[in-house]
Length: 238
Length: 238
DNA sequence: GGGTTATGGATAGTGGCACTACCCGCTATC
DNA sequence: GATAGCGGGTAGTGCCACTATCCATAACCC
Image: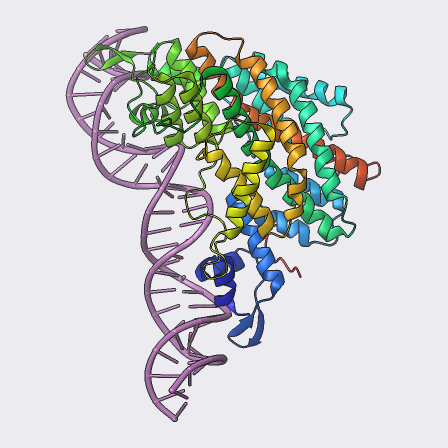
């Protein structure tokens, strides 16, 4: 097929497809003459994957490029590709994140949180390297909780870790059914990214359900004139 | 305190604080003279909350404005505020999301996914309105899975739902310890947003652990020269 | 075979968003 | 009284995911 049909099939505009090719997300079409190329089913799959990672996964184009480059590199071990892939999915709290009170305590809170993360990992027996970005991501989250005065929320950490382990088991059921490296890696990427979207949506639903049961008598969420919340401005708290 | 100290305490630049005030996220300081104002501890808390929702929660400024406006509106019931808050956290798949093949099937896949979501909700006995955005969010995710050729992943849906229910229980333990409306609502918001970040980070860690156990003998994640993945370009798949 | 449409390739521009710079006249502080 | 900080406003910045435009050529359609 040519680019027009690829565009029609996937709903991605032609210029956008060209853009993805330029960015290295999508391999160029196979040239049949100096200025004519054809695209195969692999291109279509790849394109849909890109859109999934972009729209549902919320990854940015550059990150997708890195993930796909790792996936396409046959020299990388499964473990390493999975490492790259999952690393890219964790929001990259660049360097100086958090409030970082310059004179008070630069990041003593963060350091304490890191420690707690280490304890958790040890308690769980997880095999995780010292500079795995997930450690920092979790520590930043815990530190942020402290920062907003909700450090107690961390008490549910173990319940969350239980849930995460159940999810990992479920993911494994899916991923490990494939034997070939490529299919396996793709499943892992999909599982990680879309799995996050899945759990997030499900959490939303369970929260709505809980809220309905507890704080509202008969009315259902969004049945009446619920939400809406006029043009969001003019807050007047405290 | 004046704006400079507020800035120093939270690490947020003064112009940014002014920007938040302009956007209605943060109430203005109390004027003591025509051009002099003081800020209290409530401002500091609010500011930290804004940064948490922004940096860790990934909400955009406008969405934060809506959430806070709802939180600050004493006329809104707990259930409604929670509805607004959790709604804003679900990525707003605007309208025409997904691939949307224009001639093939406009969104038959999406419709089928919606149906499956309905069945799940019924099966679970969740009390959720028909136009709750979470339904769509979940349906979009399922449809996307189909689109990338991984519809089978939806088989783990029930396992995910189990996990989501456990998490909801844990959240409840935390939220319901507060009785006053305001504290309760804030806990709910925090729990929803930061809880997502928490579970996402924990999932990352469990995946790294699983990956290490399964696909690598002794080496630990990121111990050696793992990731890195040079300038992401020049992919050559298929 | 001649006109319309689509294509590959490239450069430049757009729109959204979260800030950030700059300026003014005034005020707190040393 | 000098210096630094402040409230308030407008305009600009940097990043990012596209999108527009152009060109010469190729495909398709009668």
